[in-house]
Length: 77
Image (cartoon, rainbow, N blue to C red):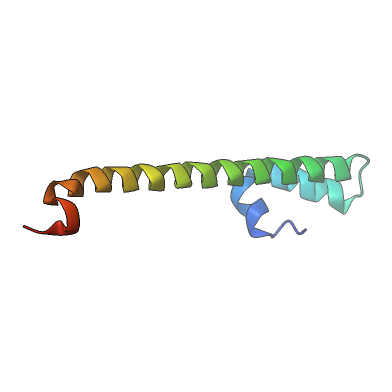
């Protein structure tokens, strides 16, 4: 995985990315652990966002179904 990966760019805060880049550049002890933590953070954040989006779509579907149910079965007048 690269620091330029969309998942990292989008969900890891810039200060954390810069510390990670510096640690990896000098091959600091614990850099791999920091990278793993950043990746886990990004993955969890992406999963939370996807969950919220799915939940919102489901709520919108429910709302639309209720709002449009006035037309009766088959939509006939």
